[in-house]
Length: 104
Image (cartoon, rainbow, N blue to C red; front, side, top):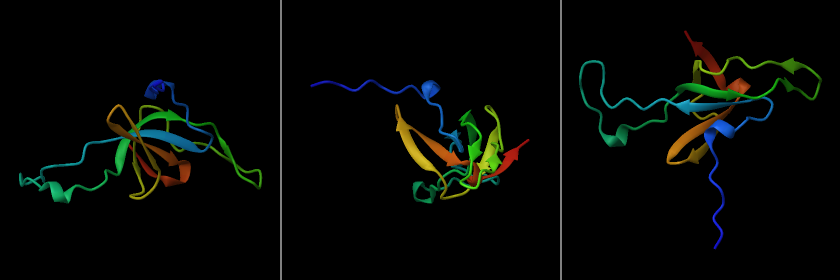
């Protein structure tokens, strides 16, 4: 039985109009020190940009540049993107339009 080669995250280059993000860990404790139960787990909406795809060109010919750069932290739509699991870590491929803000 042949095993397929493992994909290294560092070798992934998003398609034009997409960004690869590593989501931050979900909070397990509130600011006041209360620990949250496992049933409270929500999808994180913040993460670090690992790589950025090329400028996206719309069907009308408009050019849309990425709203962020590699290494920046971004906030994104709660249900945006596509999850990809590599070596037990879930990453997100997000469309440029799914990015809500860059965290400074």
